[in-house]
Image (cartoon, rainbow, N blue to C red; front, side, top):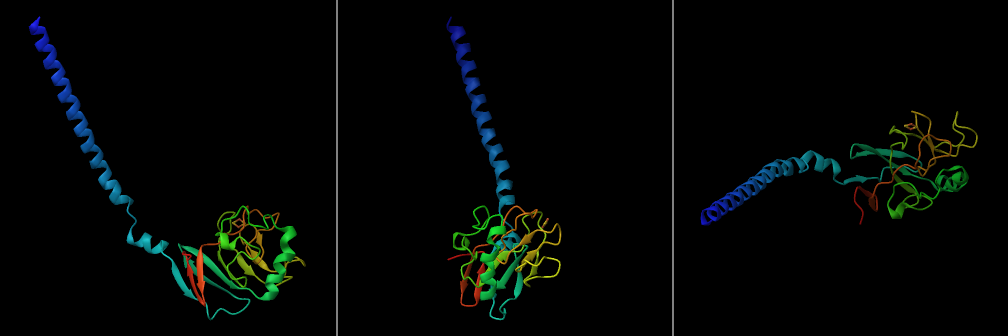
Length: 197
Ligand code: FES
């Protein structure tokens, strides 16, 4: 009887040792797997630089013109809109898919009729929301081939999506959304893209 108890105790102790050893090995295994993962998940210097904010002096940008800079490998369109261009925004409203930018991606300070902090300055990701082409800037009213009611805007060369001078997409275009507005800060003529304060 006491012999059987001794055997039982030995078996229980062996099981405990096995469980402890397995748990310890499992822990070592997890550390072994996690360490390289942590290393590979850390952003490279190149990736960090690509996502960092950029600063651009826009003092040379003339009224009615556009300049393009690159940020996060995307073209950023910067347009100094004239007062006349701003007046045309309201004219386009009835023909736009989302005139109030309820569906599109923009910071709160750009969710307004002109989609910008300063009404005269548009800062926008120049990427068509259909399949990612770069729409061309077509500011001229009645631009040839765009109809007599064209008040200026952007035309995508890939499948013909049309946007107004605030990057809002016209009904009937294949693009589903207005173009994206990135976060930005404007102090005088110094524009910082990718950061807002
Ligand atoms: S990518 Fe612009 S319309 Fe298709």
